[in-house]
Image (cartoon, rainbow, N blue to C red; front, side, top):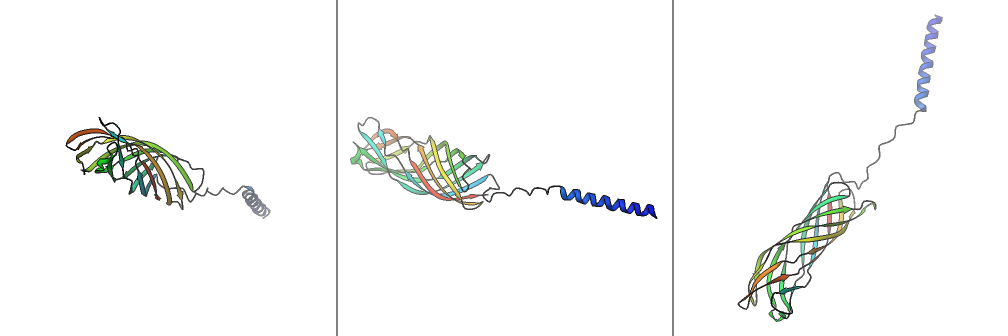
Length: 225
């Protein structure tokens, strides 16, 4: 009987000691909460309204003082981004717009020479700054291949052929994220775009270079998957 009582006492004592040891151990740390602005996918898409503001410059070979000017335009733009890391992304920019081509300088009296449509798909490599919370600025640089289509000569010009060409692009902008998926975006790009062209003006064949070099100023919405 005494042996049984001693065994029970030893068992209870061991249980009490184990319980006390458990109470002295620190509680496991709670998992770190994920920021509500953290995207769940490397993919992002934006839609913008874009103002296209070309530089009024160019020349016709062999005509001293010749110049060219181009109309501004507003057009929709869509881009798709893939984030390799939280800071580094590649962006594909898609949009198309039209511009009127006008004589300027010594050929200003010719007026409107034609209208062209421009398709400049562009790829940029970007660095995104992520230390400012919902405000997330970025800078980028890349290349575009610009295609000119549906070209129509008017007025004194009876033919207009602007050549497709490569150009460089610089970019700066920011997203302001409202939540983990949706944000607003402001973006400014500078394209260096100087295509060669052939034309027939007043029955004479001419050629030259159109220095478009447009600014592209856009605002729109961002969606992160």
